[in-house]
Amino acid sequence: MRPLPGLILAALIAGPAAAQSGKLVIVGGALSPDNDAIHAAFIDAATAHVAPGAAPRFLIIPAASGAPADSARAFAEQLQRRGVAAGQIAVARVAVRDDPDTAEVDESRWASGGSAPAEVAKAEQADGVWFVGGDQARIGATLKTAKGEDTPLLTALRARLAQGVVIGGTSAGAAIMSEAMILQGDSLPALLRPLGAPDTEDGESLAMARGLGFFTSGLVDQHFDRRARLGRLARAVATLPASQRVGFGIDENTALVIDLARLSARVIGAGGVTVLDERSARIDVEGGGLRLQQARLHLISGGDVVDLATLSVTPASYKEPLKPSMSARARLRVAEGLAVPAQRLDTWLAEDLVGVSVSTRIGRPSFLPNGSGVSLGFGRTSSSAAYQGRDAEGRDRETIVDVAFDVSPVHVVVRP
Image 1 (cartoon, rainbow, N blue to C red):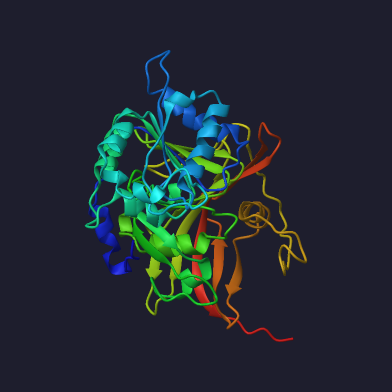
Image 2 (tube, rainbow, N blue to C red; image 1 turned 135 degrees about the vertical axis):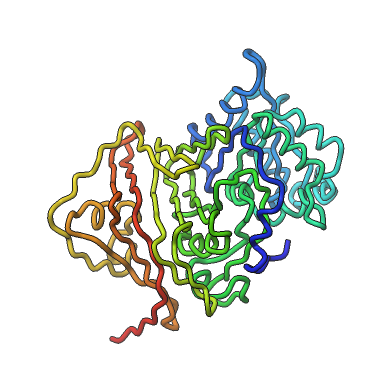
């Protein structure tokens, strides 16, 4: 799948829209085999779709993986560990390449699986569908035709979602959920270069393509915390039509569980979800880089619920409002993660912005070795709030509501 230039990204919205029914379990990658909450959310949603006492059927789609058969087998084992009978699990034979380590199967013969009647039949019977991780471009290559149209398998998946089944996925399986899809990109190159610019030794430029469009309330990004992707999400969201400029950055081992009928989403798992709203922001991309003003951020975590129609946040019941202190704590955080402990964005905003009554704006520069970079700014708004609490697993969790966010180009000179 070739990257799409920014000027035609608006056309992505013209594709088939996801029916507002069913559920989605979108995982930000690196799903731990021991994460019972996320696996249970997927299994329970499939079980809720069948008659009482009936066993749900599951379909695993390994198209994104470089080791399709093994990746499907690994997720099937996780389902079986949690009580799903092996006979209730099917694997869609769709892939773009063979894994030489699986001599018993030639996955290169699965390239046309998106149009195979046997694979379509599996989708038509599934109550829960799971996309494994890997390379999201491979999913598009197998479930879309060369003309960009839906294959019969993808048509069947859309029909099942409209009938109320659950579709889940991790990593690449999360990236394909939205209509517009991020193919690649590192945050600083995404913020400083034109869309689709050549990659350099300083990192990958932002490239986008068309996803599958099961989720129509925003753009999905994954591995969000581990790979520092706020910058690339900000640039990717800015390519969308103004009324649709909303992004959801999902941390690793974390899921956004979405009820499409209710337009409601809940966070479960180890990390959090960053909700970026640029619908009323001022955006300038002249020269290829991004200047962003008056965007809004929410940072939500375990148990929090967000209304997808209004983006209003309901913090989990175990969290209490943070009472701001009267004095700011000046900090110079240099070589974070080396000379000083690394700090999560939600913690930093709680302790140095929303949690300090006299603090109105904080920011940090980020730059490439040549000195070109950006300043990321965060500001208090009239409705900014923070909530803190300890979840059932004993983890300290935070929620940050309605913080202003801006991006400004800078040039940094470092002298001894």
